[in-house]
Length: 63
Image 1: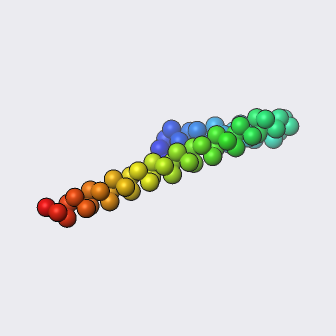
Image 2: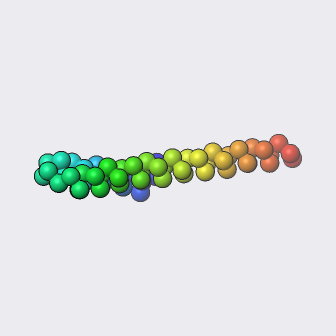
Image 3: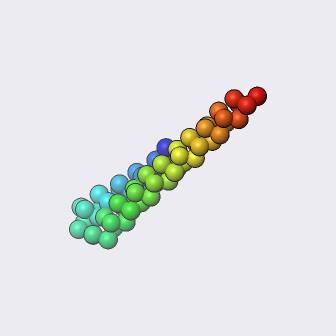
Protein backbone atom coordinates (compact mmCIF):
# COMPACT_ATOMS: atom_id res chain seq x y z
CA UNK A 1 0.00 0.00 0.00
CA UNK A 2 1.41 3.38 -0.93
CA UNK A 3 1.78 6.22 1.53
CA UNK A 4 -1.24 8.02 0.08
CA UNK A 5 -3.41 4.94 0.48
CA UNK A 6 -2.19 4.46 4.05
CA UNK A 7 -2.98 8.11 4.82
CA UNK A 8 -6.46 7.72 3.32
CA UNK A 9 -7.06 4.60 5.39
CA UNK A 10 -5.94 6.37 8.58
CA UNK A 11 -8.13 9.38 7.81
CA UNK A 12 -11.06 7.04 7.29
CA UNK A 13 -10.39 5.31 10.59
CA UNK A 14 -10.22 8.69 12.36
CA UNK A 15 -13.54 9.72 10.80
CA UNK A 16 -15.12 6.44 11.83
CA UNK A 17 -13.91 6.78 15.43
CA UNK A 18 -15.03 10.42 15.60
CA UNK A 19 -18.44 9.40 14.34
CA UNK A 20 -18.69 6.62 16.92
CA UNK A 21 -17.68 8.91 19.79
CA UNK A 22 -20.08 11.70 18.81
CA UNK A 23 -22.92 9.45 17.70
CA UNK A 24 -22.71 10.84 14.15
CA UNK A 25 -23.63 7.81 12.06
CA UNK A 26 -23.03 9.68 8.81
CA UNK A 27 -19.43 10.53 9.78
CA UNK A 28 -18.92 6.93 10.88
CA UNK A 29 -20.19 5.69 7.51
CA UNK A 30 -17.98 8.12 5.62
CA UNK A 31 -15.00 6.82 7.55
CA UNK A 32 -15.79 3.23 6.71
CA UNK A 33 -16.27 4.16 3.06
CA UNK A 34 -12.93 5.99 2.98
CA UNK A 35 -11.19 2.94 4.42
CA UNK A 36 -12.83 0.62 1.89
CA UNK A 37 -11.86 2.93 -0.96
CA UNK A 38 -8.22 3.00 0.15
CA UNK A 39 -8.18 -0.78 0.51
CA UNK A 40 -9.71 -1.27 -2.96
CA UNK A 41 -7.28 1.14 -4.58
CA UNK A 42 -4.39 -0.67 -2.91
CA UNK A 43 -5.62 -4.02 -4.18
CA UNK A 44 -6.06 -2.61 -7.68
CA UNK A 45 -2.49 -1.32 -7.64
CA UNK A 46 -1.15 -4.72 -6.57
CA UNK A 47 -3.09 -6.43 -9.36
CA UNK A 48 -1.62 -4.03 -11.91
CA UNK A 49 1.88 -4.66 -10.59
CA UNK A 50 1.38 -8.41 -10.84
CA UNK A 51 0.08 -8.14 -14.40
CA UNK A 52 3.10 -6.06 -15.37
CA UNK A 53 5.39 -8.63 -13.76
CA UNK A 54 3.77 -11.47 -15.69
CA UNK A 55 4.05 -9.50 -18.92
CA UNK A 56 7.71 -8.73 -18.25
CA UNK A 57 8.53 -12.35 -17.40
CA UNK A 58 6.82 -13.61 -20.55
CA UNK A 59 8.60 -11.12 -22.78
CA UNK A 60 11.99 -12.00 -21.22
CA UNK A 61 11.53 -15.69 -22.02
CA UNK A 62 11.24 -14.96 -25.71
CA UNK A 63 14.72 -13.41 -25.90
